[in-house]
Length: 395
Ligand SMILES: [Zn+2]
Image (cartoon, rainbow, N blue to C red; front, side, top):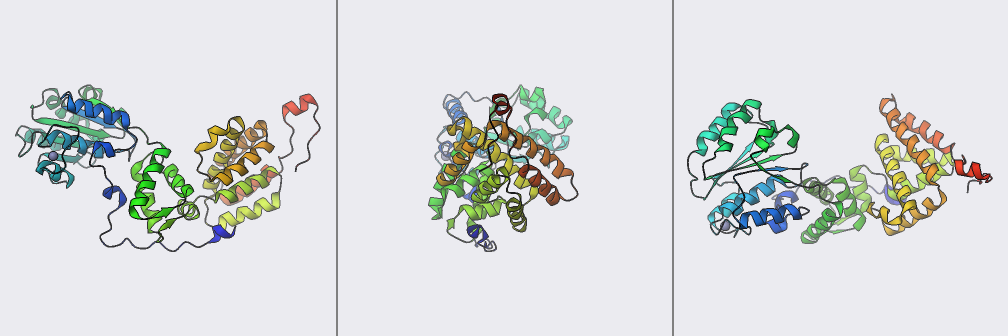
């Protein structure tokens, strides 16, 4: 428990001139885009063969690189050396796009400009040729936010766009975009980025920034990012501004409001062995540490699921961001528990989760759940009953 008690210094204010990681490491080439290999390959081929069409729609959860990809397409199309999948990066067009000041690449946030008049303005302007580049490119972010009439006014231009115009739409909610619009666009789906890919990426950034780390710490951040590079990078930013040049798992756990995994394993073991008093004591400790009861239940659910996977196939359990030593502890724990009893625990935790949400005092509800769990321990499984195996004494 000592290690987890270590105090975290209050987060230091960002250094002057400090650029957030997501900005600093925004890809400027297709080859730097992570976790979207298929999309990148398709785009590259399309640009090379000049078969890209005039309207695209990029869809995917937030932070997977939609606007970044949109800008990369814009660069690829407008580079003086191109259109080329490998824009030079140094011509006037490439430079102005990177600095967000190209007159011919117009970015619009549909969330704030939803009206017909806004669209009319765009359509009006699209008649005129690009000022200095090959194409006039409209990037419309969160396009699903446009009003119905705004979509309708856009439709005609999409049907017969002037040859110098390209539209790139981005959206997190493709199902809200009318079919009439979709049918006129080439669609690209950005995938949730796998946590292994994210972790490798974050490690590379740490190295560039001269920051050392524990593997477990980075794995935790990658997992909490839930497939979004941007979310992950802002967590990494936070971890770095804790002031140290070494990122530890304990700090990251505190930052994310996660229980220390060693402590959590011990807590789970106490629950399974019916050690009620001990479990309640740990629970109070978690509470003092500011841990949210629901969050703790989520952790317990995840641990139960992980232990079940371990029992079925240890390879299934590689995903969880734990150190080798803790994985070993998990394996030992999994061996002592049966699938039926883990399933029972899972059901009780899940039921408890709902109860906690409704309870006037979630903390007390959690205590009651802990008492219930510790008193459930030695129920025999159905198979044991059928085979007449005598009850095993809890170890
Ligand atoms: Zn260029």
